[in-house]
Image (cartoon, rainbow, N blue to C red; front, side):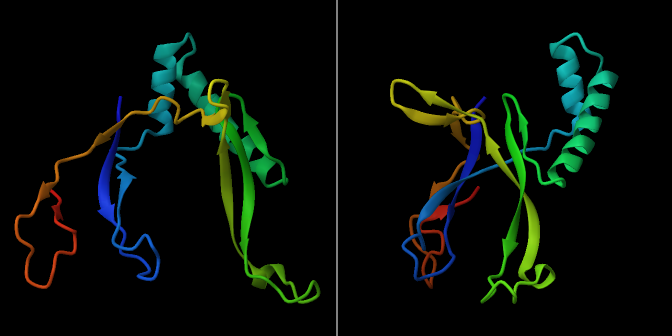
Amino acid sequence: MPLNYKIYMNKNKKNLKTYNKFYARVVHTSTVETDELAGIIERNCSVKKSDVLAVLTEMSEVMNDQLQDSKCVKLSGIGTFKLAVSCIGADSIPEFNPTKNIKKIRVSFTPITKVDRATNKRIKNFTAGAKMKEYGQYTKIKTAPSGGDPNGGVVKP
């Protein structure tokens, strides 16, 4: 199935070269939750949905414990999860205060990659073979409205 995208205009930071340029952004049409994933897994193999749910629930708890124990969690065929922090710098080691300088803790995910032997390029597992499809139609404006056209001649449906 193709990956849906829409085109948008970058209106951030006028001094950057990317200002007023058009870019694609993935359109997420829905969210698949654990219960639905368990049902799909049940249909694809010989394990009952209740067993899949039990394993996924326990995996979530174990991953949480392992990540908070400063460990990376690598899931075969998926990728590696680890915790990372966003900080404000301190002028010296004695001036560093975790409460003051560490702003947030986040989860970092690195997907499994494979090397394409023909091109010697790394390909991320989840993006390999993805096809793109524009989500919705855009039409060109024949005349710009007074004050200019903020969309560069493109109108969303």
